[in-house]
Image 1 (cartoon, rainbow, N blue to C red):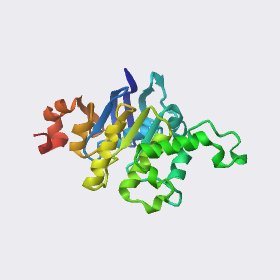
Image 2 (image 1 turned 90 degrees about the horizontal axis):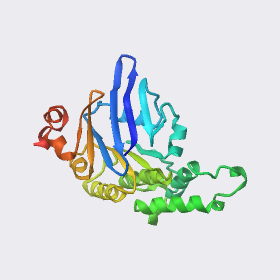
Image 3 (image 1 turned 30 degrees about the vertical axis):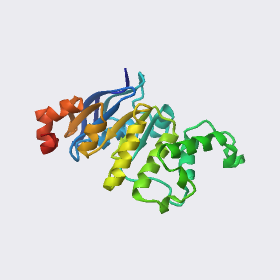
Image 4 (image 1 turned 180 degrees about the vertical axis):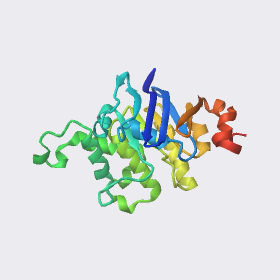
Length: 249
C-alpha cells in the first residue's frame, strides 16, 4: 500500500517547468530512490513534498490524505521528515540541543514553554538521546556542532530528522561530500533504518542506489522517464542514455 503518492504533480517557475506531471507511489516500509542528472527536478520534488513550494498543479497524498498545499511548518507534524543537501544545524548548540529542539518542535509539549526549564521535558530529552543513539553519536551528545566533522554533521542531520518521530524519511543526498569511509558508515546507517521507516532517497552515487533501493524512479528534465527495481533500471536503455552511462553496463 502506498503511504506517499503524487498525482500529475507539476511545478513551474515562469517558463521553466522544474517538475512536470510526475505521478509516483512510495510503498510503506520500502526504500524508494529518486535519481537523475543535475537539474532533473529531484530536489524541487522534495520541496513540493515537504511544503517548501506549493505545486502549480497536481496533488500530494500522504497515507490516503490529500496534503497538497500544506505549509512546511505542518508537514513534520504529519510524519514526514527531511534531511538537506547542505547541513542546517545550530553550530553553537551541542548535538543534544540541536536534536532536542527538533524533538520539542514536533512534539506536544508547547504548553507552558515560557515557564518550564528544558530538563522538565524528560520525554523530549529521551527522544533526542534515542535519535543520537540511532545514528551513532551518543558519545558526542554534549559536543558543540561546530566541533564535529562533516561526516558527523550528516549523521546529526539525520538524527534531527529522526527526532521528529517520522513515518517517512526524505533523505536528500546524505552521502554528499563524504569520504569513502564516511560514505560506508552512512550506507550502513541507512540500511539499519530501512524497514523501520519508509525512506525516499535522492543520491548521485549509483553504487549506493543500486545496493539499498527497493524501487527507483528516474527523473530527466522534470519528468519521470522510468521506474522499477534496481535490476530493471540498470537494463533500461532510456535510463542509460539519460543518466547511468557506463555504470549500468
